[in-house]
Every structure is written in structure tokens, then in C-alpha cells.
Image (cartoon, rainbow, N blue to C red; front, side, top):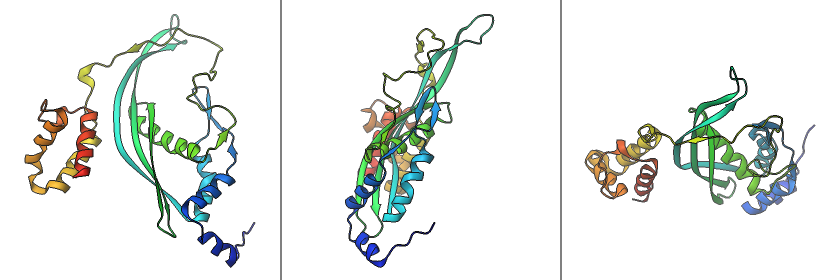
Length: 242
């Protein structure tokens, strides 16, 4: 199948501003049926969502720029019900990483240079090396769903009234607080601090770093190795403003 666009149609589209183009995408994408299951929940995969929206973005000359503003990783220790445990079903320990991200999604009209910036936060919990990826994937998928008001055939996966697998029930999971000594500063945040610090202070960064740490921790610490993720993000935000 070939799509022929006349010169008149092209000129008419070029006259549209960025919000008119985004509206055209919203009018075209009326709804998506959920196509995958995870932990007994149906949801729309990122691949399916982009397969609908990406061609429309290309048609209207729009790109979506994504930026990670902050990342917070927290270890989650809890217990899960193992129905296959021997000699009888029992609880077993499990731990994962809960990643909280704040992102900036910016629509850019490549024909006019117009922009539309949007902040969007999301969480993702998964195995140690997958927590951040889950949060980023969740953020992109649900930003697009909510921005274009795309209705799916069921409620969102984070609706507490959704019904899961009822074939076999187990006692409520027991949450175990993570040991304090296991909480470490995200190495990505430390690397970001050093990159920004050297960009702002040059050769004087090594001498300036303890002062930034004191500022972020209200004089409680002097070493960046002992920072919490919240304190590290505060330094990054401060350096970005300077």
C-alpha cells in the first residue's frame, strides 16, 4: 500500500503548530487493547504503544526528547509465598530494587522548533539490575497513555481494585526493613556529581566538593561516599542551577 501526500496537504500540515499536531495524534489514536500479562495484570507493552504513535510522530515531524532528572534506588526486602516449598508451602526471603525516577519529556516540532516540556515521575521495582529499566519503561509508556488520554479496555495496572489470580491465596506478604548498612549511594548519582562538578569548577572541584556535601547535608557530612540518594540529587540540582 502506498500513501500519496499532495503538495497542498503538505503545506497545510506545515502551517500547524505543535499543539495542533499533537491533537491530530490524539484524535487518531482512539484506544489500545492490552496485549501482555505480568504478575496477573494485563497491560499495554511499550512496543505496541510506539507502533501506533511513532508513525504519527514521523508524519507530523515531532520527536520526543527524554531526560532523567533524578534517580532514587531503595532496596526492598520482603517475603513471598512459595507453594512448591518442601515439605510444606512456606515463606521465602526475596529482595529487589525500587527505583524512583523523575523525568522530563519534551515534544519538539522539528519544522518550527516549538517545544512542549512535561515533568513525569514513575516507580519501578524489579531484580537488582532491572529496577531502573522497569521505572524508565513504565514512565515512557504511561506518559504517552496519559498525555493522549488513551483509553484501554481495562483499568490501569496500578488500580488497587483490580483482581489478580484467585486460584490459591496466601497470607499477606511480610515486609522486612532493609538493613541500614546495605543502603549505599547510587553510583550513577556519584558519577553525575563529579561530571557536573568538574564542568562547573574545573581543577578546583576536589576542593569545592566537601563544601557542596556540607551544604546538601546541613554540615552533617563532608564525604560524598556517605550521601543518601536524596542528598546526592540535591547536589546535582544545585550544580545545575549554578
